[in-house]
Length: 223
Image (cartoon, rainbow, N blue to C red; front, top):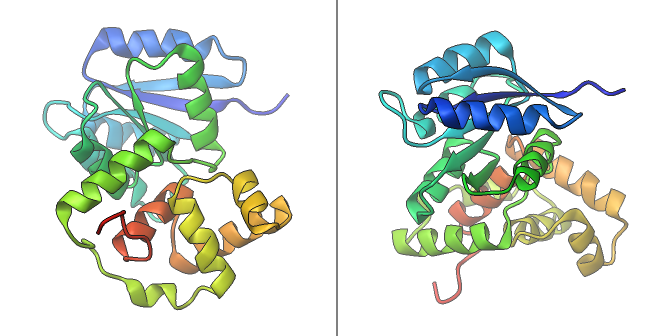
């Protein structure tokens, strides 16, 4: 049997932490290894427990979830992925959480199955921006009016095909969908994705999507 996905839950509400713990521990391939009551606690325990995935609330007293996410994901060679949980379906939180290094974003009213599947996807490094999250990301980008971290020059390290794959990742396409769109073997697409992440120094495809928008490779409609 494969090793369970280790999860840590960071939320200032005890009932939320306990509820998610019960839901996730009911999954045969997921184990909750710890809980944190705020951002600072999450940073300390992530270092101590080395979970695969941290479920991170956004609004917490003291250090909030976005700041804690930034600290956790910027540790050199850290393998921890962050899945942000919030009751606030607001554009600014989607965008800022992803910019801080989150690999996924999920509302707290998601079902148990959706929560467990999100943990699996993020842990596997195959994090995708769902169509509704992609739409909000584009909306927020448009509101800001311009790339916040211009880095178009970095795209020059990519081949023409890799650049094409990156643009499709940013549109929320899965490897299978990119494969069909470009008429390539799915394994070839996976290879391109891996090379893109290495060349750009990014952790996963979610961060690649954010990079594509911020660098100006992808422009929102009407922008």
